[in-house]
View 1 (spheres, rainbow, N blue to C red):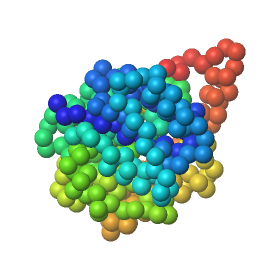
View 2: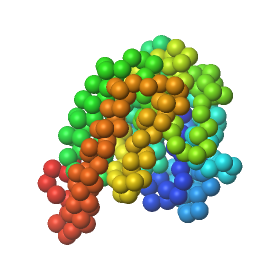
View 3: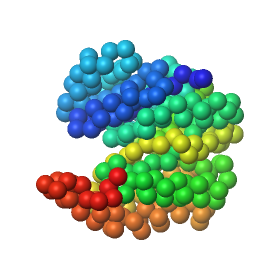
View 4: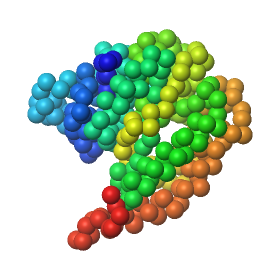
Length: 277
């Protein structure tokens, strides 16, 4: 099996990074290493990681400082460049990978034709998580069937790619200095441009935070419309590719209301509402 490195970009994540690291070290198959790439955080992110390292020796947790350019792209790149595994797994500092995540990544890459893979997600801070996971699986399968390989996507909160594939496209990926694109889709497009296969791993499950719903409507629209800007930056224009933008815009308000209500309920003396798990 290919050795898996885990890369976790982080910026001011002191509140959540410990939980993510606990999930990363609690795998059925251990990762070769776990790299937290700290993009010049002004909070206690680095201190939390160092404390975790001391409490969990032998798990390959590494803290990498990225104090140069700010943003997800240079931070991601630093982590990918530092990784020593044959496969580089990636999720966010607020993500909770399933206990068998590394095992499932290894299973995906047992197929030598796979250059990158992405899996389904659920929102760990919303109710009805099993239902949300089932819905996410259905949506992703539909999207994968609807578009050809060159338009396929990676999801930065739940993805992996071969180190050899990263080296091949390293100098081609968009730097995105103004933070206008979806960097994970940019990765997918460069991989597909090289004729490299992107696979979907239905058992490669990660829990992610719904905190994006706390964005103002204006900020959320800007975030979601990155889909179109990313494809346009590659000269790709297709009505089919507008589907993710339309979908996320349509669920923003109801999902935001659910998140707000759930947070109030979960903080009440009675605890979480029925059906929250």
